[in-house]
Image (cartoon, rainbow, N blue to C red):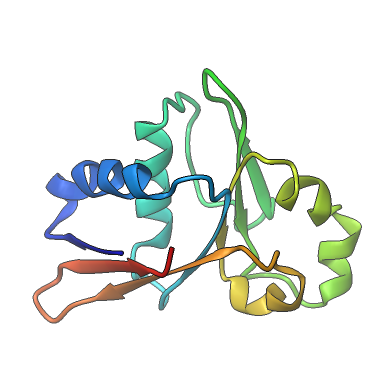
Length: 137
């Protein structure tokens, strides 16, 4: 899968395209440099899935839970994780294996505990300011 986001005016269109392609997958690990747009894209996807909560980066909380009409969505940011034990202590398995959508930012820090079927999504900033979202589904 490869989705081009021309600019912020088109991010919801890209989010709808992403949603149409995710199939039965539930855990998505978002890779990209600081400022690549991971949180912004996750926010657009959540909004398209019906989340009405305020969607922010869970940098300090580590995980935010958003409500949708059908099921919760879990949004993680592991940027501040210092030791893998912190992830064990938070009960990551309850989230990752819940069957609910999990969107993970900074998964590089917890790769050894990611489910085998986690979808690795990379967001790349292009020279013209657009972004490319790519994943192997």
